[in-house]
Image (cartoon, rainbow, N blue to C red; front, side, top):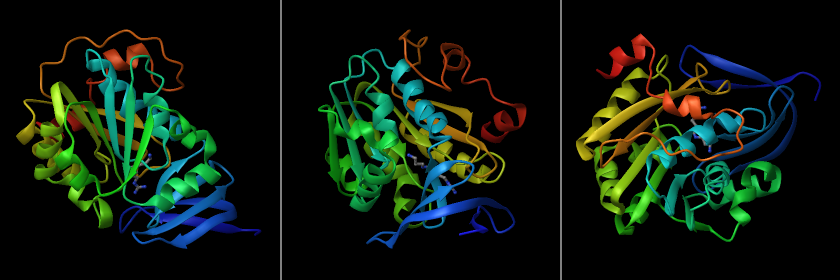
Length: 271
Ligand code: AG3
């Protein structure tokens, strides 16, 4: 393949093009179109229904930020769950925290885990840990039965297709009920540049269920616009984050301390 490009149509008017060296896997699963591509610039990359999910080069940003920020606001996280996130990157980061006893992954599409284990082992490695439990089932139904979780992270695809039901107020309410008394949730909530109304929708939905709601950002170059958001909900007032020494590449204690400092236009968006 001499000059082959993959481009994600991020909106009707914006696309990101990456030069492809190889197609490692491509199939229509029961839920979505799955591809693992070898890119020149970002290494191996997982794509679902045409949307870039993760790449070897920049995955650390998203996986560190979706996990460490909420985990360090919880006083003693032991039992946590990731809804979606079949690549396993969030689980790998969660397991860096000393007190974790159980890290559950609830992924609807078995093929995402299979492809990640095979082609993205650096990301999926956490899934082989004894504390990791993988459930191939619908996250919405699973959360309704779950109880006493400390932190729940919604590591979903965009709110179209299989993930649509992960962006509605009823789902955040079920998460609230699945959490213990110090419970915290976080959900990936898209780009403030390209999808501001999704951020507003997630914020509104999470604040219906949780008394405390916060937004924070991180720079993920392969996601639409490169600026990404996470919406956190907490049952209690947030205290200062705990101090834990973690080996990371994006997250720092300083980023954690200042994570709720937002650019003016993002503050305005969620006011
Ligand atoms: N889940 C969030 C990906 C959303 C990206 N959207 C897009 N490319 N249009 C990432 C899964 C990583 N564990």
